[in-house]
Image 1 (cartoon, rainbow, N blue to C red):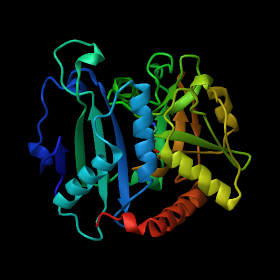
Image 2 (image 1 turned 60 degrees about the horizontal axis):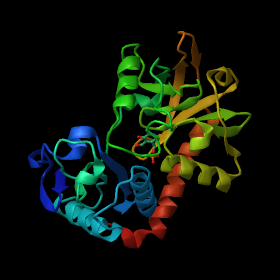
Image 3 (image 1 turned 90 degrees about the horizontal axis):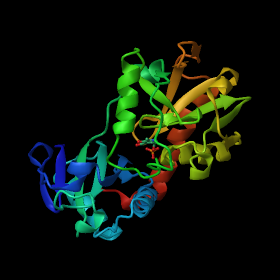
Image 4 (image 1 turned 180 degrees about the vertical axis):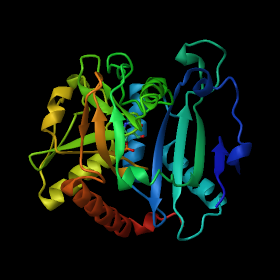
Length: 307
Ligand SMILES: Cc1ncc(COP(=O)(O)O)c(C=O)c1O
């Protein structure tokens, strides 16, 4: 397959795609997006991703000029143009920007949202992240407060997360475990975080009122479904670094990482906590059960396959 882009209807090789320098996504990060991947050609949690996109638009006060149906058709066209073959899988990133305007922040000046679709092979994560797990470190930079820039707007502005990752990479970590302004655990730079405590899964909540500032991850939602199916406890509550010593396992979740073990966490003051290499017993079980859940989903949604 060939990495392929679609900018407002114009499909090209991804490397040839162009946007205007007056596009507010480029100018101000005034955009929202989703990433979906396929399994056996079926986009996983497709409608759920659109629901989240529409929620991001609502939170960002962005009126979408393109309907869900239209975007789905454009995504289908882009996937078809990528020459993807049966047996391959695709990564689809679709972004909506507020559109073009003169250099002025007033959102009302943008009259029509733009769409940018990127289709490419799925991400190949470092195999060490699965075989051993990732090292997370807590950076000094705090997660955006929901009162300032709600992390539930999946926006094209990742500067907060970029600064966090940049800081912990210098410490030798693989990713950041970002704290909120009031010191609660939020999420990693582009994934949610879950722990195992007393044989149950625990994760920080996403609701704005809890001030834990993290994106309502769809993979984490699938993890919760899997837990329900296999009778493992799953709950969300605010967590702090002081809670980590009582946690036995840790993993992150995202559409492209799926369930990825965490083998250690570095606290801000430099102390470290180690988790089982390659994931503990429950993490390993969830990785297997997640695969089954996805296989079942793929079967029941087979008619939605792109290829
Ligand atoms: C900041 C952030 N948190 C969490 C996630 C995980 O979300 P999902 O499981 O829907 O991919 C992502 C994924 O892009 C993210 O960017």
